[in-house]
Length: 150
Length: 485
Image (tube, rainbow over all chains, first blue to last red; front, side, top):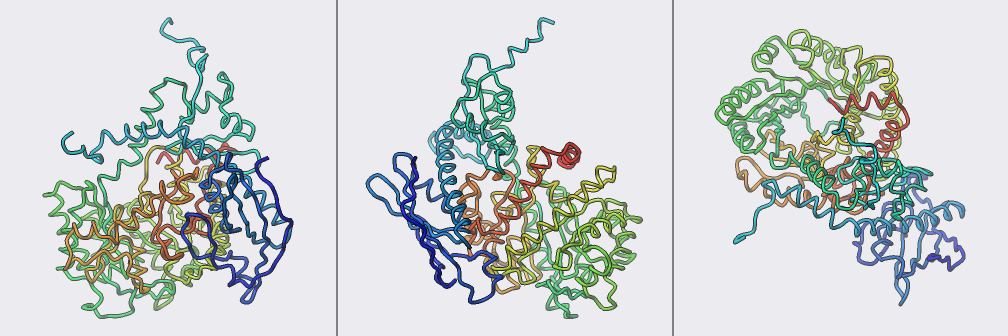
């Protein structure tokens, strides 16, 4: 198992305005948009966040795969990412109405990290072929200009 | 007979296989979508996908044959799949060197309608202030014919362009003179509500082969509610105009588009029936636009996207029901997507292209000489945001406009092959970059895709179409027909 649940659920509530930003390594800081169903509750609604910590071993996962997974699910969760010598530690902030929903989202996140790791491997395994196809595709068009002197 | 190879020749034999570049998406439990570099697709089960990912599919299996045919894998040492994928990739981008086929002339901002969602029209009789001048039109034509595209389409927009019909006539005559010298084909489309259509206009349209694109939102009560005008007879005039054009010029010379408002939601079947009653077989169930009626509020966007998707599914299902009984009717958005999914032809629909269609697909010449990268960019400017204004016909050159940061920055930033989440999305080949939409709704050209209603809407439709294509033989037949048109 590469994934370990290290902490017990710690349900907390924040005013909606308190969840407007988040940080991940090497990503742009952008505005956090609260999902629609939160808005429908009207002003003054309180968004429940449940924090969990997950650890991903560096030998099995890259930081890029974790960041891509966080981005894909960023309408439902956010993450503080730190690293130790052997692992990436994710403090995941999950927007959920109850624990069952939170567990489901956490499972989605773990699966998404695995899928992103697989995507990374497919990209690496097929990179040479992809570059060959693209160079063949555009070599016979006027889109590629020969370099001077060649 | 000796020239016919045995079945063994067509199996993988002893050779191993290797993956070609592919992307995947888990559609639902035990259903994984695979797409290759050019969008050819296959569905596999979780177990099959695991075997593919772990490179342990039996080399003589049915699935290996399927995935080879779909150019998702190939045998070691094969060259043909690489050549074919290169060819298809080139076909996919073939339109790029011949850019800007559509040129939109805003002949006037004046309009006798007062549609609540329209940001651009003016209820005014001030011709000097809101009409395009002949001088501006000539400069716009000069720019139009600088485009590398061999086939040009000039579309007249407004306001209501027929309120400035003398300028429409002037531009058509001038363009015809220039086109013969330039060796380019030009077609003309008038986007009009048809309320001002008269014999003189019809006669000119007949002589110069003008096409008409009009608005028909559905049944009379819905259309007239969406499109108020003096007399409250917008629908009656539109329908009468459609029939006059069909009878005088031919059935193919007029088409209609609908605008979906909140009042349209839940009435998809009535809207389709209305189109068929008017003899219009192409129904475009268009999404809500964020440029007009206050969808800019971020919170309501996703809400509207969900409601619109229900509306779209209701309409598409009804159209498929009708098609199955032999009725000739096409849902235009689905047909655009299916062409991208099932053929190597890119229909060049501006919202579903990457690089984005702004500037490359269309240029807009406003009545005052301002040049915009798209019609949505012009509408945005009317709301006070001039981000997509590229320059002015009286002050800037073709080169300065086409190489302006206002055009190149959003094109580069929104390119889906380098945009977060888009670059590894299995639907990337079908989708597009829409920097104007994301700038409007999220404040940057790329947008945050997990929260983007553009992403939600299109991902939902792609899934819907592919699953229907796989599961429903009748829908598959209809979809193949739409894609082939």
